[in-house]
Amino acid sequence: MSEQDLQAIFDKKIENEVKIEPKDWMPDSYRKNVLRQMAQHAHSEIVGMLPEGNWITRAPSMRRKVALLAKIQDEAGHGLYLYSAAETLGKDRERIVLDLLEGKAKYSSIFNYPALTWADIGAVGWLVDGAAIVNQIMLQKTSYGPYSRAMIRICKEESFHQRQGYEILLTLCRGTEEQKAMAQDALNRFWWPSLMMFGPSDKDSPHSAQSMAWKVKRMGNDELRQKFIDQTVKQADFLGLKIPDPDLKWNEEKGQYDWGLIDWEEFYNVIKGNGPCNKERLAARQAAYDNGAWVRDAATAFANKKAKRRDKDAA
Amino acid sequence: MERKDWPLWEVFVRSKAGLSHKHAGSLHAPDEEMAISNARDVYTRRSEGVSIWVVESKHIHSTLETDSESMFDPNEDKIYRHPTFYDIPDEVGHM
Ligand SMILES: [Fe+2]
Ligand SMILES: [Fe+2]
Image 1 (cartoon, rainbow over the protein chains, first blue to last red):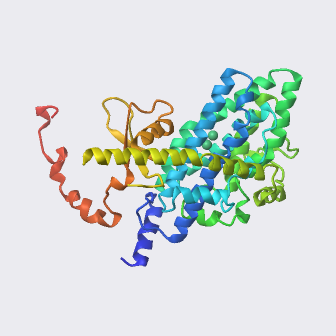
Image 2: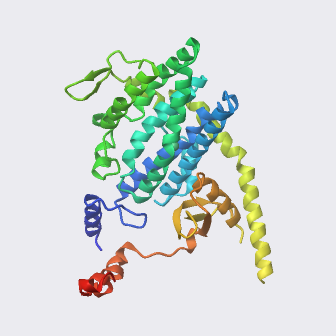
Image 3: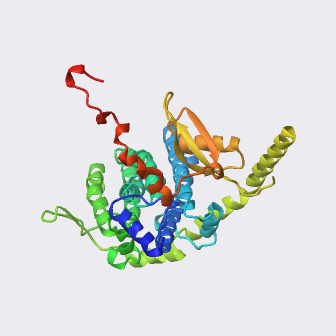
């Protein structure tokens, strides 16, 4: 079949909402684009474990500790689902992981901010997982089959993440003045970086239009961000917290909130590696990779020994 | 056979007794025992399963997209394979 015919079949599938599967023909540019997005998403799940992992030993109660542990374990699972999905496009797991360590791959800029207080763990669950959920619900309908299936599985697990975070803030907000102030401070620091999670405005986003045409993404960055804001404001109100945006107000005509300007300079600066924790995050991943080497080697040696013994028994 | 990289395994989970195993996803592991143990942690953290199969991915063979016309289309004109093809009077009752 000529490349033109294959392209026509591919285009027809996209048009008819038929998923693209690993062995199907696809344009190289589609393969590259989806692979980049899935790898970036996988890295975000894994790096995202670090700011929260930092608080496991300091969780204020057993209930909070088991919840946080379970949440972080889920994120490891999410990373694995996504690495598996990425691998179906023909790049090895090892290579994908090394790309991150070598600084060739990105992950979500939000994880370059530190979790300074216990309230930050609440804010991360509520806002960071909340924003991720908005994005991931949209991605359940992505055109690449394995990515879509990973997203469906992930979305089922996410709502607990957001609820445990919100519950932490609710408890703090019903507590002492200091506890409430701590919650407000966490919201102040996490609000804008959470909005940045949706990426640059579509008009400034290099991949947006093509991703939409391929139905890899089903909604634009701006639309997703607006959706997140609209659903989050009343949750903040319920907590009695103030969203740190003086321009935030309900627009009756549009049926949505108007809001202020994102400091995109900060966003690009963090992406470039100059956020508060970029170096620390990569160093932690590198250390995990290096310190795990002997475990991987031992498991391999043990498997080889077992296989040899089995071959001998069979002989 | 010596090998350094961990092979890829496909994971199938039986969600409850009486149902078939269904593909859940894949993972890397050095051997079948570790594959099952990792599959438990990755794919059944909320009692999604009562039984797990793992199969090394290289042992799975599949049809190709380019074959799908010759493989599956001939069935489309065999409507006599379906119950609605047969005329049974209503008086006979449910059959
Ligand atoms: Fe996640
Ligand atoms: Fe999450």
